[in-house]
Amino acid sequence: MSELIELAPWLAAVVIVVSVVVFITTKVVPVVRKFSRFLDDVLGAPPRLGMARRLSLMERVASIESVIVGTPASPGVTARPGLDARVALIEHEVTTNHGTSLKDAVKRTEERVTKVTGDVEKVRMNLHEHITESEPIRQQVDDLHAKYTKE
Image (spheres, helix red, strand yellow):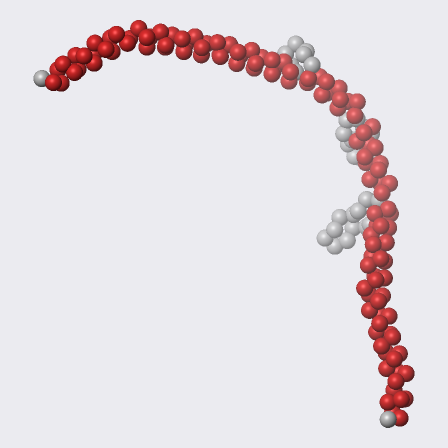
């Protein structure tokens, strides 16, 4: 019995140490991991095996600004045209300008469709007239057919 009394403080210490380790691994480690990821987002991360270099927050902001302004984010990088240039290109395509814009092409297509629709209507009317005119002839053919099939 005295041996158990002597071991009790050690057992309590082991239980406390295990509890602290479990608490740290379940509660503290995820917080540290999130903080580490936050720092990687802000400061950037070097390339690792199978992973590309991660840009820092300021590098990403600079690349977004370069898209808007139209200047290269870093030397040797070709920038996309700025916002003004892209808006001008869109305006060029949606306004009439002597046949080269998208709007002109749509207008030409609409005119051709309207013309073809009129032509189709004329053909339909002609066909209707032919059918109407051929009705007496068809009746005569049917009568002759009936007459000769009875005999």
